[in-house]
Image (tube, rainbow, N blue to C red; front, side, top):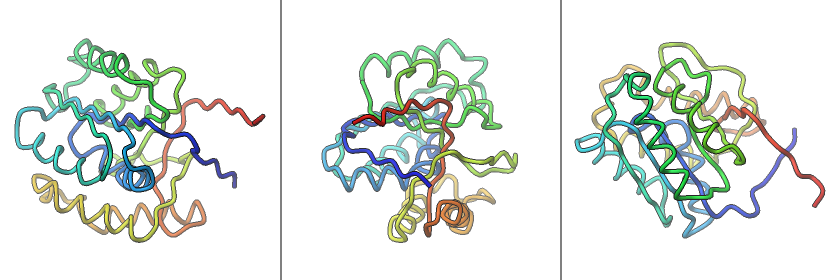
Length: 215
């Protein structure tokens, strides 16, 4: 197993099609990075949920998932489940985000996610952020679309537990969903931990990766 660190990680971009996507898919990784690098800049963009309860949940949650960070969050108002019909608006939102930052790491949905909103945003991100490391996070759901990840980020037991606690605390609108529970989140993290020879982990897809191993 090859382990690559991030010695010069000052800016992160994280995007989601819906409020809670980022926290579910990469919340543990965000916690780990922000705790290790106080003041790190985190630019977050969410395409739907703006102007209502979901945006309020997202703002409180991302503040908790990015402690001590320079957090800049934008939540747009595209209708949930309708991204293909609002492609121009989504593309404009991604291009606006790209124009305002030069990140060292991008966290986004997977390009092979079964949800059309996730998948559409993922494809826009890999086009807009052509020269960046884009990690595609996974979200467990009824579609059964979990695959074989290419990258893993280990989570300490404390971070894994904290992630689950924050998910349960900050997204009350989602608690009625059958899959939104402690067992689902910790269970997937445990499986990805087994695959990466650690206790818990978050896993990511990598569409393209350029290595510079000469330094």
